[in-house]
Image (cartoon, rainbow, N blue to C red):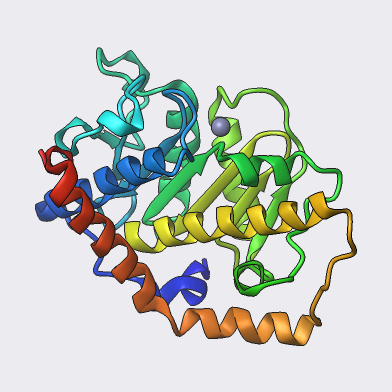
Length: 261
Ligand SMILES: [Zn+2]
């Protein structure tokens, strides 16, 4: 698994079993911020972070809770190897379970997994050609980092879907984004801050490309060499992801501090 090479500079110390509070707070902040940015959808979509070295123990949002209402203590602590999870009184959304449990179990380096149906990423995933052409710095950030899943086959309601996605991510090499055709987007990262920043910038990149398409004018696509150079340069800005989430938490601390509860 090589995702660390793409976002390693943005990595923070992975949470341990003794430090779920930090992981809970970071993920709770991400939920709140995605709600502010209107990147959530109804009470669906899911974000998770693993809290054990092997990835089997992970935190995820409870079923049916709006992102804007999430507090740190709401997050469910699940075991990816517990086949009775969906029998719990507080069972997570089945589609969240099947996707995230298998990804955390199969790809321990993917400490954080985020899945959204955000507007622009989803619109991109609905195009016959969903290529994120390198036309600005944000689109260039993802040059070579996007895996496309072309096979939408209904809602993911079995372990097979999580394994299928894990196979595609592992097989794709240096990929951090999984663009799910006719569906949405999934991002993995070595920390909440890294995945949060990756998701944010992917949505911005898709917005810029689709705004260009809306003009009907030809795209000004840069060379592969320039795109690859810019993608590498982004990796040197790993501190940006940490600063991004730190600033989000500072704003939330001032305006809706209950997210830490
Ligand atoms: Zn979905």
